[in-house]
Structures are given as C-alpha cells and as structure tokens.
Image (cartoon, rainbow, N blue to C red; front, side):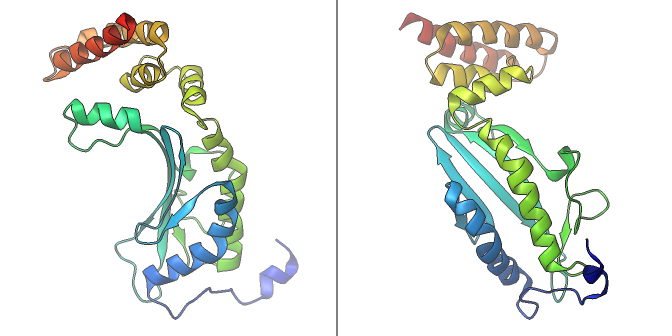
Length: 225
C-alpha cells in the first residue's frame, strides 16, 4: 500500500444500489472479465460462477450475509469441485441432499492470502467498511493466485483421482465412484478395500452396511465387464 492509499477517500462501487444488486454489478464488472476467459459463466441469481469440465463442475460461490441491507454488504466466497458421477451415486444411495462434492475450500484454508477486506476469521468480505477497489483487487489476486490453480488440480476426472490420492483420500466412497466412472476397475477394487476396512468399526451406524454393499456391487459390476 502506497502513501496515497493512506490519505485518499475509500472507493465505493455502486454504493446507492440495494445490497444484492450491488454485488451482482461488482461481480459482473470485476470478476467476470477474469473468470470468463478460463471457462466460467456467471449466475447472478445464485451469485455463482461455474464451469463444466467433463464429469466435473467447478463452482465459485458467494453467500450474502442475511444482515445485508442499507450500506451493509458482506459476502463469503466458497470454492467447490463436484463430480456428476458422485452426485448420481449419492442420489441412488439415498443421500438427502446429493451434491457430488469431492473438494471444497474457503479463503480460511490458505496461508499467505491477501486479507484486505476480510473479517478477523477471513470468512466475510465487507464492502461497507473497505475500499472497494482494494478489496476487489485483493480478492481477484486470491482467486488467480490460489483458488484457480487449486481447481486446476481437479481439472479432469483423471486429475481429480490423482489429486485425491495424493491427499490420502483414496479410501473414500467418492474416490471409489470416480474410479468406477473412469472404468478403472483395479483402482476401484483397491480403493474399495481401503474404504471397507475403514468402515468396519462403524458398521453399527444405520445405513452403513447397506451402503457398503451397494458400493461393493458397483465395483464388482465394473470388474465383471
């Protein structure tokens, strides 16, 4: 921050608009030009940027504070990678709200982020209290420097499988389902064995034995093809 930033008045984008409309305008003018060239489209109603990568969906979501109104305009970003194969599996498995999420993060998860405009726990951006130009610049920097490279690690289902494995998450049902979706029978069998071993101490939980058996049937069906 230069000396001129210390003494200038805070820049406020679209300060006269209702809070939600103000967020939409700011996202359209400052985030969309950065995210559209890498495949994202903007959904104004949901305050969400999404792109499709084969079986995967990348989402940059923004949650508006329920206290927003007047000059108060806060938003919290969250970043998600979903697998449509996993969502289909969750739905068939009776999950109440199937999402297919295989990775999710927020700015709280990263060291070294530009914290300008964020509250003390790095969760909410506060447009009312902050210079909007600096806030947007900090947020865009966090997106391009941290979030998008992380999402690229989940750029395809194959890369997602490698990433999950490198994180030690190849014992999860999601990993098994993605391996099945890719037709990787041997990998699905290996991961299912890990999943089944970890599930053993918890088989008293309602629905888990049945879920384990359904996943076993899915893996065996792939092996038989």
